[in-house]
Length: 207
Length: 93
Length: 95
Image (cartoon, rainbow over all chains, first blue to last red; front, top):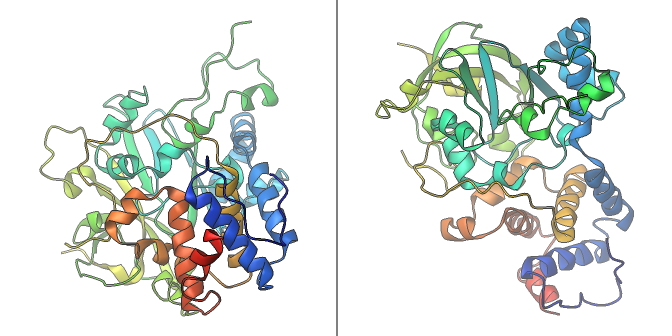
């Protein structure tokens, strides 16, 4: 983040969108008016840039190796995250949904872009896009196919539309051939997209 | 909490002016209670600066794709799960 | 059934899902952080932010980028509450 000066109006940069100028102007106004302090804005920025899917992946990997943890994760993902020293974010309820042989989950927020950011980092642009928001609920298998994921007819696809303040994430199925992997190695296979439900986790690398 | 897991339930078909979190594609449709969540402050009033009290029960309700989009006959089946506030739910006919 | 411009579930669309990755720009992270700080201060709660976004005229909603909508909403809500004067953000942004 570049340094900025609160003594004068923001300098226009021809290469950046008008919105960038407005965002900085808004920041300056709010600080100047004493509505917000620079430190709290900085703290917010630091928190946002610290969020990554690695946190969610740790939850999944632990669930894969420890059935009792998985039970706790399914019962209350927020508490399970705290158990691992992770920040579950401001949402009062976080729900983990398990993919199985017969059920595949996929998450969307058709009304805006609700997403478990604390555990997965910022949502991908496509998740917030209008076509994903429109088609995920009405053409789930078509959308999954576009992502390269074909789900058999014998598997129920469940699309979860996060319309309230509950945040959902998917526990993908553990890939085959991973019995010998450590928890850390397993976590490395768990991708952001597999926790949204539009992809499977990565396959283990050949030894 | 009025409804229980497994119960069929209908979503009100009423129009609503102003902020609300019931997507139009489920309005007037029938589904099934999948989870009984906790109570939450009402976003419909919080959106206008109110404190959102009293809290309202929230449910996870599932719908068949064919119930929501009956005309899409050649599209494979799936279920859609939506968090719905109790004041948008009615007994299924 | 009349639906708000934000209510996208089930709409027919030919627009492809662009799956390319886009790192957030600095101003987008800043906007998100401003919204979070305003929420913690009780000045713009998440429901007000959403309501502000939903009140964006449809053509503008569809044209605007994701965080542009947040900026528009924050301005709407803060103007309602008298934290920002009408046109004040425009004037500051114009320099």
